[in-house]
Length: 303
Image 1 (spheres, rainbow, N blue to C red):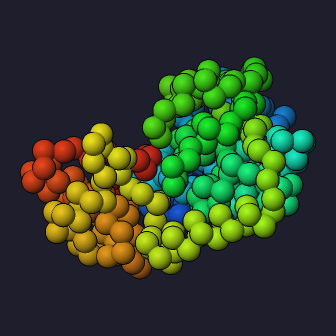
Image 2: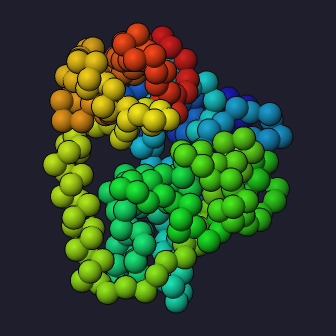
């Protein structure tokens, strides 16, 4: 593949994976292969990869922990660039916490606890990376990433510019930011938190964790809440009231614990998950006149 040869000038061949099964890189544990998976090991490698892809006008997607994405079974005919361990770091600086975009939210949360910084407790159970949390303005239990973001450090989609944007400049709304349109990539994040007491912070996290574990199907692969919250409604309530809890297609199921989750009960294909999604959408639209939109990013081709 010509693009692979060109990428080897930017990144070691051992960090380029051909026909890579994306089930191993997504929290759904389902889906097809990517033509290429590229894992930059530094900021300079990331910029070089992006410049190469831009020069070739290649189709590509940025991936963090894969907790909010589903690749159709036919695979992704392009390149997936994974922001991984090379962008995994945290450093406390007064009331600020500086984090690499590839740092898991659970790790960011622990760093905040140790620095006795409060405000991030809501995010302790979010399964993605801090970069993904900024991209989606992830939130839980009344908190959102926009509330604690001082600035995001970014690289342009073509890899040629580095710059910073504040939460306001990113136009952070409900599960959406300006990054969805621009394609700029988060590389580092500065969070502005409040001074707190470690014991109290741990108690808040324990409370949220207990509530999450009792009400969400955390023992099964999923992408978290599958649908966006429709204005004036809760997706899970609509799905439950439509009698769809426990509905199964192949290995995919509307969770019996929380109807807002579609889970992989074992051996689910992306097609199973998407067929179940379509049934849920049709039933809720028919019964309540509400169109449910997926929060999960769906890419690739059907078989």
